[in-house]
Length: 102
Image 1 (cartoon, rainbow, N blue to C red):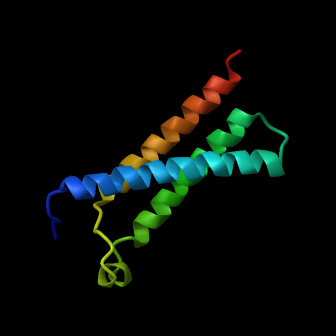
Image 2: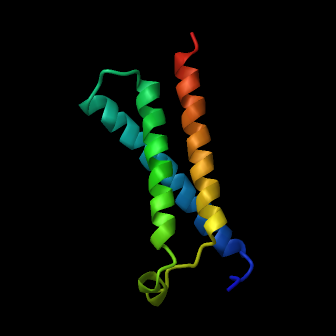
């Protein structure tokens, strides 16, 4: 079953959700650094982005479940989750490389 074309409000929702996840990944990486230590700040932030990418893929498996559809949660195509996970992984890689370059 093909979903409807993504509209402006859906695009705003996706971008807002992506930015929130980026912020949470950054804060999570900083908390990981503060609690565990033993690595550079950039490596901890990169790890936060990589964990966020993995969680996005886990959420994608359950997002369009009947439970959420009954509660009015917007339907999101799988490509949006995969694109977000790839973007988060790339951001993490760039942050990690930026921290290792002298």
